[in-house]
Image: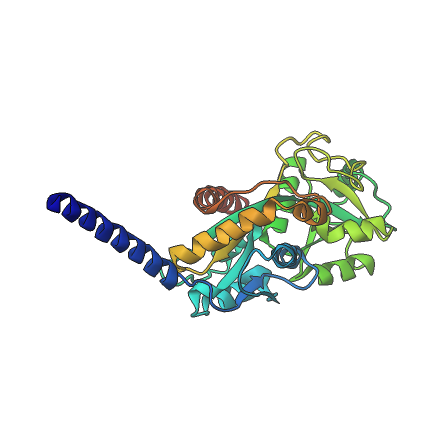
Length: 327
């Protein structure tokens, strides 16, 4: 009887130790304890800003995070200004940043120095975006073949405004495939390029659907062609693709995601990856963001996003080097 009592006591003590250890781990796992800053690499109303604010709207509505998430817009240098600001932050677990395919090229073109190992912490890819060739409503051009004919007759007679390196890559790919050449003008923000477009200072710009849908629906701009693999939803459903015009290699898409600083803890990475997964499962995410901006519903968690980003970076850097955008 004494032996049985001893066994019971040992098992009870073991159970208490396991319980105490679990309670201690739970008590010490307090992340996050303060507000998080979410850096959007652009101006208010731009693609990165819309991404960040729609994420925060869903987080707030459903109380998906235990702390406030505050969006801060940092425009300039095709994202390089915001990246430098983000890289300077010391509270590594309390900062997030929007990223897209254009930013990948910018890190190489602007030789952005990422500290602590040279790689940001992948959180998640939340959507894929497309590119359009856009003109003002008063433009005499209505389809891509008319643009090609005009440029072949008079090279560099038409000016296209580009906001970032991916825009420039899109134009360069089209020029290479169609055997034409635009006059090029660089801009640092969507607000600037659309002001020039509507003011008649340039003939075209490259834009994501979400950046120009309001202008198109309002009758101030029109989409000439899409670089998407297939036609987009209304109001771009009547807009032909470059692929349809006989240039199957002219397909460019943009991945949109979220990164943490280089050196972010595993706990913080997993926490925000889980939050973003929940965001992308909510109906408001699809209705208010994906559908309105004509985005692809593509989600990759931290591990898959890390591989996707690395593969995407390799493709874009190789492509940009071939086109002469990167030296």
